[in-house]
Image (cartoon, rainbow, N blue to C red; front, side, top):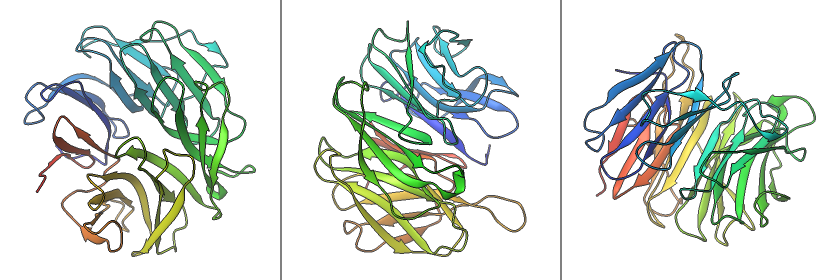
Length: 311
């Protein structure tokens, strides 16, 4: 089956994983037990806009949505889901990013249009605290190095979502307080997805709303998220970057979407093999919202679920 885009996925080992289709008319959760060779639909409905997914073991998992069932949880491997009603603090309006640090510490943030909230659980998802983050207008993704240090990314605007600027916030106290470690200069761009190659080198994709812009940008840190530098290259205008990954220092991929004149959506990927000096277009992986390296495999969720060969 082909989708506009499969939003997010999560593997707990090399064989068992889940993927969500969130924006197509029928919202589905699929499961694999053979390392993404085959997928079975295990849950579907037509109203929850699934955005993010994570599991702490083979039975217990979480899905972030953009609607009234903000955070859903399963205790039987994804076949049934209930909604988490109670949050300690200001209840979020949507969870676009989930990050599983370990079986106890789970983080989330959202949503990609206002308001911006950060959520966390330190007891495996039994209870959650939620906090409105006033320093930013919107949040998309989160990443934690340990239970104290992490980043959340999104955008900052006066009032209009389409005039936001990229922003990266950093915490060293488990999310109690946040420092603005990066704010972009260009209105009409927001941070989308995070990928860290190791504890020091990390990347954030930049989604642009500037329809006539031929600049594709991404952000890079080499000191564990303390400082960030913007890199960019030239492409055909009308591209919204979504995902980024570097497999090693030299080899990286960026994926995204492009709205075509016939109403379809088809976004190419870009690949570098020389540390971002040159990028070339790749049509094998379309509409990719998340790249992830997992147990020796490189996966991507987009128009299809892709298992990308590592050369």
